[in-house]
Image (tube, rainbow, N blue to C red; front, side, top):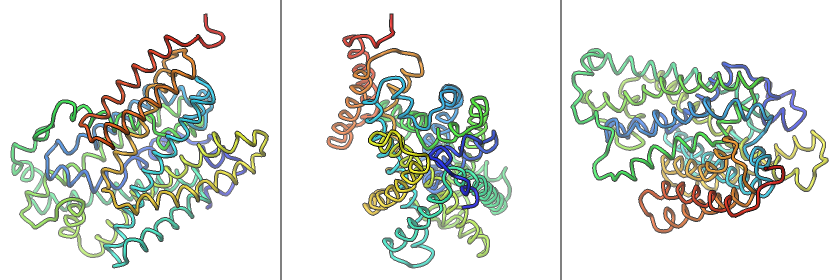
Length: 438
C-alpha cells in the first residue's frame, strides 16, 4: 500500500510510472519467474528424471528471459507501450490487439491459478483447513495487496520476497551438504544415470516442445515484460533483463541440486510435489521449517500479483479504453483495479479444477505463445496487414485446441508454431500491403 500510494493513473498502477531502476527490473524479473513450481516441481522432477527434469526450469525459462534482454526489452520500452497488445495494435491494427488482449488475459489467469493452487495447498498442509477455504483466503490476500500496490508494490515485494527465497534455499543446500558429509561426498554419490537431458520414451518432438514452450512463453509474457516496460529508460530495461536472467539461472540450479543430491542422503522422502517439503522437514529444525514455508509462500506471492496485473492491463488498455477513449486517468485507474478483482476471482475458479501445478504453468506458457509469430514479425519490422497477424493467432489457437486439448497429439505446440508461421506468410503474401508501404 505504501509503494502504490501515489498512483493517479493507469500507467502509475500498471507500469509503476516508468520509474524502475536496473536492480529493481532484474530482481523483480527473477522473483516473478522464480515461482512455486521452480522450487517444488523442479526438485521433484530432477529427483525422478535426473537433469532431464531441469530442462524447463531453470534452463529454458532462463533462455526466455535472456531473449527478452536481447530482442524485446529495449525496443518495447522505446515504444512507450503498456502491454504487448498495445504493440500489436501499433503494428497490425485494433483487430489484432483485441485478439492478443484475450490471449494475454487467458494465459495470465491460468498462471495466477497455478500460483493460487500452490498457495492454497501449502495453507492446507500447514493448517488443516480444507482446500476450498484455503483457496478463498489465499485469493483474498493476494487480491488485496495487488489492488492497492499495483506494479510499484509488486516490485518492492518482489525484491523482499526474492531475497527471502535466496536465503532459504542457500540454507537448505548447506544443511543438505552437511548431512551428506560435504559437497564432494554428495557429488561422488551421484549415479551416472542422472546426467542425461532426455527422458525414456521421448520423441524428438516431445523434446523440442519441452524447450520451446517455456522459452517462447516467457518471451511473449506480459507478466515478465511489464517489468521492462516500467523501466525508466530502454537501456535500463535491457540491462535489468540481463541481470534477471543471470539471477534466475544461478538460483534455479539450487532446486536442481535438491533433486540430484536429496535421494542420495538415505532418508525417506516423499514423491511428486511433496518431495521438497519432505526434504526440508527432514533437514530443518522446526523454526527453520517455518521460515522455509514462508519462503515457498514468498515464491508464490511474487508471481501471482504480476499475473493479476497483466490481466488488469489488457482489460483496461484494450477493453475499457475502447468505449471510453476520453476516460480520465483516475477513471482508468479505477477500471484497472476493478479488473484486478475480477481476475483474482476467475483465477480462483480455475484453481478449483485441481489440475497439477506443472500442467497449469505449461498451459499458461502455451497459451501465451500463440502471439509469438506476430510479435516476432512486428519486432523484425515485417510489414503485413492485420489480417495476417489475426489469421496466424487464430490458426495457432485452432491447432493447439484440436491437437493438444481435443486429441492429445504429442508435439502439438511445435505444429502450432509451424501452422502460425505458414498462415502468417500466406495471408501476408495474398493481402494488400499496408498503407505507406512501397
